[in-house]
Image (cartoon, rainbow, N blue to C red; front, side, top):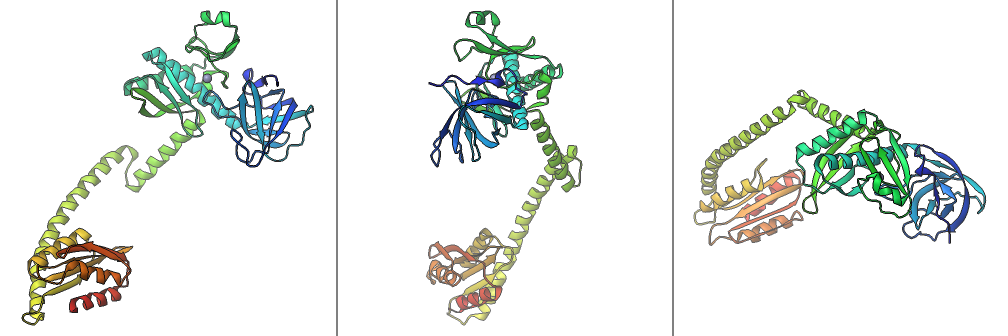
Length: 412
Ligand SMILES: [Zn+2]
């Protein structure tokens, strides 16, 4: 049985370089089974390591070991396995040099510590315990035994900002079980034996195996960017800390600036400008509907009169037209009115992708659905409906082809 790996990151979460003896190399089949990440060639077990393994809601470190890329780091029964890509060539028993990717470590160190402070502030201000934690590649979350009001969430954020601004020292303790009770932990430990405790001076003590900064200053700024109800009454805070929060603020400020510029206004006036645009658009839509009704009232009697003049006595009245910028609903209401005036109608309109067609027929005339189906088939489209009213569409067609088809329908 392998001994538990010595966790160098337990006492120093800033160190990047280390040396350690290779205890075992475990070749992996291709493809490697979980938890090995894609592309992993072998798992390497060291006597000691700076690489943080997946755990406590925090993703593993990345970096290199003996020049080979570290793709994943996992812990089981105290033994840490480094999952390596191609290029590792150090024998069992020999020393190997490792290097942890510092930027990623710093990023998660900040997210993790921010989570401790958010949890501690929530507990101190509202008595709500933390039920779950997830530190993501993008945004991170902490779930609280809510509910909490928006004002309470802002108060928690303010409290974290204050503790960060005071640059309070963060200390690591290794506490024997019999001293734990007097240590006053916010959260009971999930491990037995000696417990690692992260202390924020005069603010918080929590059992934790994760990576933390030297002072609280490192995590600023911390922003709760979204809240979400989960599992009934619990509240999930989505948050960003440190450089992530700065980059998010920068991106959002830039988005607001460019949106405002696009609307020829200042960011602080954007909401009012957009509200006015919405009111204007609604008014325009109302005016458009009124105008359309008036236009249809003019068109329908005019088209019927033209059709009657052009149709021999006793023959069926047939009206076919392409109407620019009409919606399928416009076509439908026009066709219905023409049919109640005694004419069979076929009306079309084209948008960028498709030609839309509507057919209507008075009782006793040739069925609207059959005529429409035949018409659309010519363009590779189809439609459906009844003998009185049918709708359908086809891929966009050349204007001349459409006019020809319409004429053929009228004369059929
Ligand atoms: Zn922790």
